[in-house]
Image (cartoon, rainbow, N blue to C red; front, top):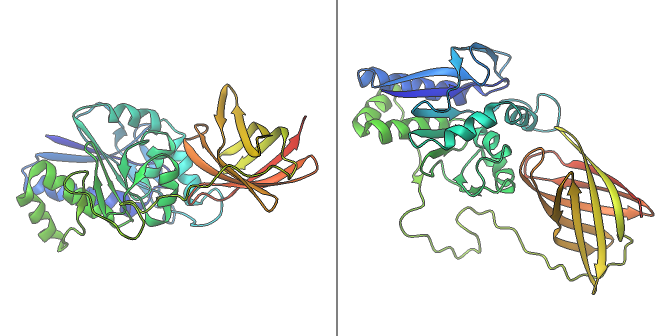
Length: 335
């Protein structure tokens, strides 16, 4: 029997979870219970508050990352903008900071477990650093952020990356579940479920196989390529020195030591957080504004883009990663 676990967390999106649950339940009915499905949480059996009008769903058990079968992670439902406690980025980040991340890390190591995500579910795993180097999709609003976590973002309805199957927007939960039913139980069961719901699976499932498309528009298959910037720019805006900087993120304040120098007409920089030192990527000074990128690992893996200006010994600016709200950067020169 194929056992399906759908992982709930506070603020989860109802359709992300319930649509796959119904598809898998239909597949169980047509396959003489060759498949079973249940709602679980990282903490165990409990009532879980969704992000849709506070509606609650009862989870019957604790997520078992080593149980053979399918584990599906939904996204969140909340405010699209801002960084309030009920905003989608904060809800996803909060979920990523629970034991879900460690449990899903174990699940991805199992040879007989398929991990599936719907909408922002891939962002929950990506925030925990679990999808770096993998191919996945999320809601169209989160594709830039997905790329900022080191994932190869693919603009497809469903992306099959072996033991990782991800779906795009909210209604893609139907498509992900139907595809998994076809993949695991065969097309006849999948078609029977489609007929039951009077719904046909949408889109072509992307896989890293076959011929790669020749794109003449200057974009890659995932359409997320960034423009490379030259770092050979004169330093004349007073950035040289050591800076104590603070990033006020939605998941807490980060203290970072920035070391910025000018040598041979080019700006270079290093960011130090705890025992981790990271070099600036593509630092560019233009019209008094310094921009650069950083790959950070705490509190989550992200590729952040920075913009900053200096007024005497004070630095102000922002850091941005995809749909996450811009993070305020403040700093003071210490030498």
